[in-house]
Amino acid sequence: MNSQYFVTPQWLSEHLNDENIVVIDASAPMPTESIDYQQKWLEKHIPGSGFFDLDKIADLQSPLPHMLPAPETFQKAVSEMGISENHLIVIYDQGNMFSAPRAWWTFKTFGAKNIRILEGGLQGWQQAGYPTESGAVSHHAQVFNIHFSPEHVISRQQILDILHNEEEKTQVVDARSVERFQARAPEPRPGLRMGHVPGSKNVPWTALLENGHYKSPDEIKLIFKQQGVDLDQPIITSCGSGMTAAVLILGLDIIGHKKTALYDGSWAEWGADDNLPLEK
Image (cartoon, rainbow, N blue to C red; front, side, top):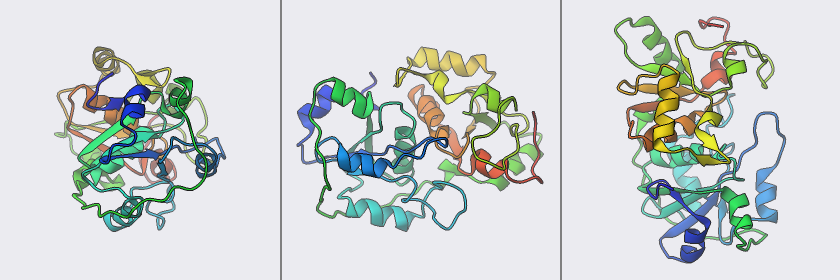
């Protein structure tokens, strides 16, 4: 376990009541699921944890799912949850590492200083024999002072600019499955084209994980290199809707690659526009 990024259930149990720690459940459904994770959180959660809804603490003016919220939207939501930028924020999901990295990236983008992900998530917490509770949780409001890093987020136009610039060294790395990337399987969201951004590489998000845990830094490096990714050049990650692209961002951060950004619209945006270039 890399303690710069993760904590174990045992560690969290020992520190759960520390004044400077807040715990949040950031579970979110996969595109093929219709699970109400806020309801599941109400029924069972780590004691004292709040629920960070990636679909509601988002840009609700956009037709695209869980787009990064405006700084003031994020600030209002997390301040009401009792979170400041100085807290040690421990994020968990159901244990599959599907959505916790997206919450990690969101908090990092808005200036949180200390963020960890719970190894094994809620499932790992329960398997270790630690208690859960049910019902709403109240917190004393705090002020989260925003330090926004806009360079963490990439737009469709910026992707187009990169494609049109032959001198550009920035790479686009797609976290979707090989089948979706190669247009051999339909997209789970209806109405989207099949294929990928021209010239992009494919590193499926699941390749970096084993039983919901990140593989070793050496293994992660090898996976990117085997897919033709140059780890000396900037990387933009993409996926179906901007969720698992953050799994790649965190994996790259773990191996010391900091020149990264996330294409927030991802294939939900690119695949919906017939005017945008496509490769299969």
